[in-house]
Length: 196
Image 1 (spheres, rainbow, N blue to C red):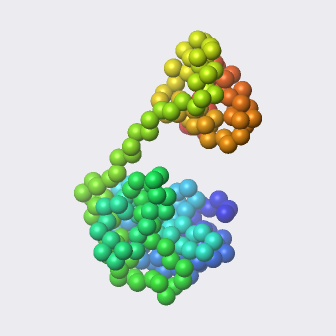
Image 2: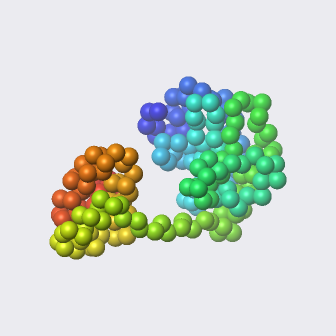
Image 3: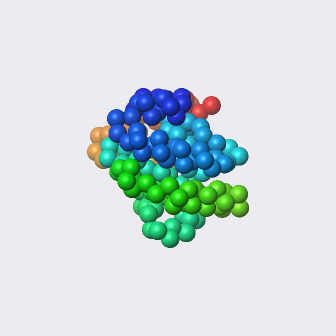
């Protein structure tokens, strides 16, 4: 999808779901939420806190509730799209306009707003640092590398290790290790060029 700066532009670029998104947008804009574009998708906020977002996929439109885990979901319409990964987010999927029940959708949105006002948010679980076998071997073999690695924040160390560990082939793991060793020794984080 093309990078968009406005919700109108986002809708115009859609190949599927324009009619669904326009109706959902109308429902969301009838609430006190403020419309914005974040990560290239329509996002609705309350006091600059994300509450709801819209995202269009090949065969459905998803209405994302940032802290949807706190919604009662009496109608059993919400799903966790990434079981085991997503803690608080829940989504409601629509494949055609006939599935849109405006009063029910607004009820869920209003509950999400109220939850945000009450400060109900999911605090991210801290991920344990698991050092990949290849990186662990390199750290054990070089005190200089080990000392440099220890200077990084926990999240940066996790990024290095996951970068290697997520590769499937041994050759890829070794190639990634060769790439990051000089970065670690130079004090450069894996994703520093993307950070402000």
